[in-house]
Amino acid sequence: MQQTFVPVRRFKKNTSGRDFVVGDLHGCFTRLRRELEASQFDRSRDRVFAVGDLVDRGFESPAVLDVVRRYDIQSVRGNHEDSIVRWRLCDAGEGFVRANGGGWLLDMTGDEEAIDAIVAYMAALPYAIEIETDFGLVGIVHANVPMRSWSRTVEALMQEGIDGKIRRKLIWDRSRWNLRQEKGFGSMRRVAARVFKRLKSGRGDACGWVEGVAAVIVGHTPSAEPKISHNVINVDTGVVYGGNLTLLRLDEIPTMLGQGTRTAPVVSRISHYLPPRESGQL
Image 1: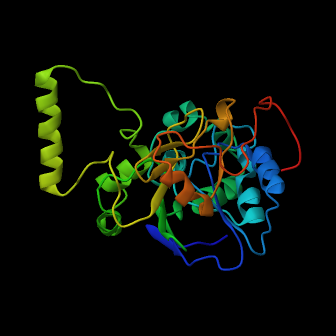
Image 2: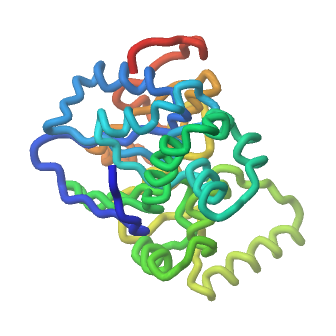
């Protein structure tokens, strides 16, 4: 599974089958298998994309490379993959990785070849994916788009290094979904001042409409069901915490966005909670 790192990976329109995007998996791969089977997934025609955080916390995480190969999953980098890469390749401490559910990898000490293969895969993951569709370009990032313009975000992303601010926001920013309520006229003035500063700097509003794409699919911030904010759709429904697993079919996006609601309808087939110790063929 040799891949070369590029910040943005682009895919042509799928003219023979369907495209799916799956929310944060966190090692719940049996759930993914069941959802794909229920959707009659055909690898010869269909494609699976992921919003990152394929691993950690879920007990099936060690099988990540097998699952990626089996379904030819194309994923962006999540904060969990990024933390693992930094631990292994940038001499970051292992404490953060373990505290965030990465003990499964740290405990593989002695099998350096397996660790290296997993880290090499994660190090090659892009920060963003673009997919051509009949209704326009669809973007995928892990957490949020920090600029109003998709093209300007991509341009900045291509110019940054591993510690760039845009890259960090793409995998960590929850501001779109976790807005703090500020009260009082003074607070309103401070909010307005921050917004004006962003607009003047060209950064735009990280909670508004993303220009230049039909939709952006993200994860990172779990919720009980898929969420919509302008043309950004959050498909992390907390499967590893006992929630659902969302498998979004891209051709459903125009209908979802046309409803103009913050909460999305059930998309594709969403599985129900199964005990965390469930086992089975991946």
